[in-house]
Amino acid sequence: MSAPRAWLRQPAATLVSGGVVAATVLLAIIGPALAPFNPERPTPRVLLPPSPAHIFGTDASGIDVFSVTLAAFRVDVVIALVSVGISLAAGVMLGAVAGYGFNGSRAAAWGSAIILRLLDLVQSIPVFILALALVGMFGQTVRNVVIAVAFVNLPVFARLTRAAVRSVEHREFVAASRALGVREAGILGSHVLPNSLDGTIAYASIAVGGAILLTAGLSFLGAGVRPPTPEWGAEIASGAGYIVTGQWWISVLPGLVLSGVVFSFALLGDAARAALERAGRHAVLPGEQPLTVPAGDERAPA
Amino acid sequence: MAFFIGRRVLLLPFQALGVVTIVFVLVHLLPGDPAALMAGPMATASQIAQIRTTLGLTQPLPVQYVRYVNRLLHGDLGTSWYTSNPVATDLAQRAPATLELITLALLGIVCLGLVIAGIIAMRPRGLPGHLIAAYGFVAGALPDFWVGLALIFLVYTRAHLGPSPTGQLSSHAAVPTVTGIATIDALLAGDLGAFNDAVKHLVLPVATLVFIYMGPVVRITGAAAVRSLHSEFSRFAQSWGIAPWRRRYYALRHVMPTFVVAVASAYGYLLGGAVLVETVFSWGGFGQYAVQAVTHSDYAAIEGFVIVAGIFTVLVYTLADVLQMALDPRARR
Image 1 (cartoon, each protein chain N blue to C red):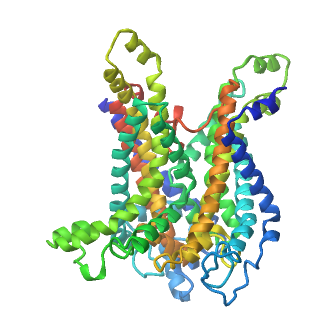
Image 2 (image 1 turned 135 degrees about the vertical axis):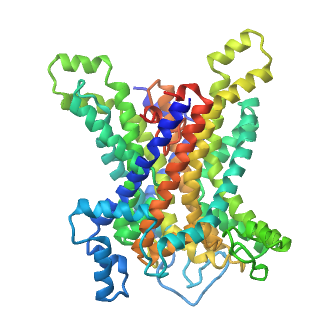
Image 3 (image 1 turned 180 degrees about the horizontal axis):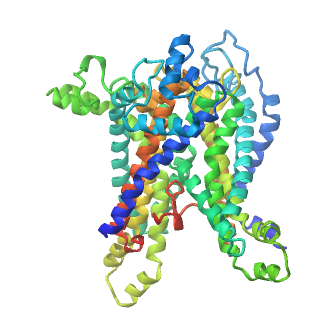
């Protein structure tokens, strides 16, 4: 197996983004413990600019911005990972059923058409607006933020899996399994799916970044994670009113950390996709067609 | 071609009905009494009872669904308990300001995006190409609300340029509201000072939206341009000795359908982005109304903004499909 060597041949950017992603996951576990100050308890030391004691300064409640930023890793990254995990699992199942022909079964064709129309419907509402409405309707709790983010991401995973399954299901090993008498569900589960997941998993890394942006956006509006729970978007919001008076650090610095994390997840996903392409795998990934427009063979309005 | 376009347009009402159905299903999945939710926390028992009759909540679900669609067809989106206005009136008041914001941003994306795609097509492997690729990644990783705040800090707080970045007009430049679009209202009132002020208020929010939402357009169009230049038809043209500028023209022509799709989906994303950017700039449009609805659990208003946003997107995608059929014969299937 040449996998480790292929990894090392990746450009430096991949190693750096991989390192940041690994550090991000680590910080999600130990971040709160590293925070030098309590990220939730107000102090009288309000609106201090960055200094050696408070490298990100303090906010209007006298809370150390660096401590909030560190502690928020656990909140934002865990919400993003869990919600992408849910959309990945549900999307792969839905996409597999929608993509696989079950040896030309009529019922499968109908099921596939119904699933595709449902995905179209969900995707006809802009992602952020749908997530905002879901949280607004079902209540502003962390659990509902996770569900909303998972729900709006699900169609993309389902479409990616469907496209990959469709490109695999006519390969010889599928026909061979069928000739050997393997049941259709068994072929799908143990032969087709394992060969069509790589592109979807590469995309999952990009989606984690997107989920972080979505969570932060909801919290920025006061519709997601609520203070005093440390969260990047909520901290940016708490500093928004001080931008015009010159106390920039409260909003700007947590935003830079957030962007660095999102950037690394996107870069890692892109590198994984490029590596799959070089390896000659049929990585079906967004990039050529934007995903919100019903793309590919679904675009034909018939 | 007219046949294909007609068929596509006929699909539109069904897609709109789909959006409405999703909202109907979501509302009925909610725990609790829909009438009490719609009425808000301050409602009396008789108000709740009245809403229950209006919504027909005592009747079977299919009847409720038909009544719901019928109400929407008559432009009745219910009443917001928070503003105590009909949701349709609230949205109609606020939508023009948002439409102005995202349409100007879209125009910026189209103009700049074409220039950038052209640059990539000229020198796909040069420094500009790499810079543009890097920009695509950065724009995808920065939160739009953060970029808005950063711009306010740099341009207003530090460089002291422009009016205070809140709202569509400075308070001293008020003009009578006709269309709800401050620039047009200022022109209608013949007040050039107010027009100038309104334009200055537009610069930062539009720049924020263009910066963030041009990223995917540039990435997708640039990749398509490079593919097109290295395609077989392009090499065939080269082997026939066709001038390079002409080959680039063919390639750009070939990229147009992709560009249209990318721009159309940007329009949908812009509406979502407007929610955040409007909050940063206190724009007072559709997006801020949505936020207010969510933070006050104003269910009728939430329903209203989802339906309007969904129908807007469906309209934009229909337009994009029609444009694509005009540009690409293969889309006429």
